[in-house]
Picture 1 (cartoon, chains in turn orange, purple):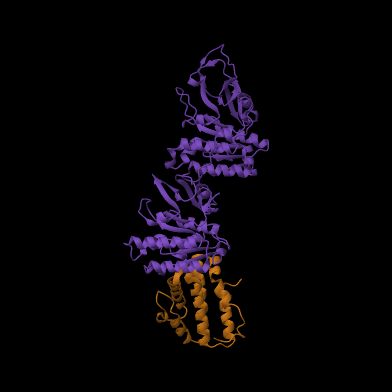
Picture 2: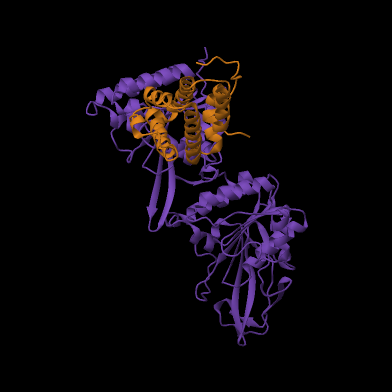
Length: 141
Length: 494
């Protein structure tokens, strides 16, 4: 069974194959993270989500040299505008690879903390929204 | 006209033993405080209550404040069996109030709680830790503001008909605190240290509308969560036993000749104390008692505090334990209480519908107790024996007896009066040889032999022999030949 990260990533890949440009993909990636924030913040607070997101950016950066700390927001909450801006300046391939790695690491970190079943339970609404639909038929955002 | 009173429903908490202590469950719509110092088990109890009580029709909201970070709380709480991830975000919602609380504005905190209650309409509300709300209050010096906040919160929850739990780190009941005044229920949890032992204790200091069981009740936290050991219910033994005379139904002791000595066996529902020095054969007699039941298809329970229960009482008892006909109460836990063992015994008796119970031995039992319970061992034991009697079982307890030839006693605890029957085993020395003798000291409301009989122990168990008619002063340890003496059995003991 595909993990939450894999299912969302699969959906993003289909969109890339369908010809979406970098800005559209970046917008979609940010909407995924807004939904992750919306799913988790009521439980662990916006600061809690931002702290986990920041840690995952740090871990992801090791394999994606183009990402710099300048792109990272503050500790209070995720700076979605800065995140989208940073992604939009990259190639589609870079955005896709970085997003996949970031999401994978985020799910791994969350799973390390609260286990597989609770992670899947909390992220289920995000997965339901972002892993369904036919990318080819969906209009790019 | 007869007044129609509001009916208070009592919720079954799902926490073993807690409903008994609460007086039948938790009053619905009550406003409760779970108080105690850090590490006392407050958050675990709150989660166990929530996961047990929450259903799709009776949903719960758990507000986390500035205490334990929610991620860590969920990480640790899911280690317990009661944690059901499928309930999260369906019948249970966790809501973080940390950022609102950090502002120190109680109105904002109340606003968030109100909004969440309106949105989710929970039947159960938990605020953890409520102490953090109070400490974060900008107007901490203003008693009125805090009191107003609590009153408004209490009013809100009552209006929304939510059973509410405020979890707070409090250290002393004597703290002047408006929260305690407003609360309908106050559950204190503590860890009590004495010497090297630590025992968890719970007390219901307040529960409006119902009679709780007063006192400090021990509890444990293990993989299943909190388990409270409520005092076993005690009714007068005479009332509890069947209306027919117990002496008409008797159980075989499983030792040839012993039933005759007891006037036909041990009366059903009686408690028997087998007292004797180390190695005299008490455990073997206890094993024979269980085996005799097993041969008749009866089930039994054993709480063994010294020996391995399925090794040292012979092959027959091992087989009965292996087949499940004899249940074993786990006595290996550290710092047990008499209430804990009582509860485990009674649970096992009910599970197996057992008729025979062995406690081997009271001496080992006392050693297994946490130091804090040893001073009350006699009283607690009396309560346990009475509680066991209410189940209708027949109980055999062994007691280590120091061989003191100038002092004839049957139990170091003064517990002899607790039991309906007593068998005493002693060592005597005859011609430079250590021999064993046994006598029936008492069988309540029944005739029995007064003989002091020799007995031996071999591969088949206890073999009762003849009286040493040639000797007198056996219990004094220095028997003398006394030809011409003979015993006339059949005395009656009331």
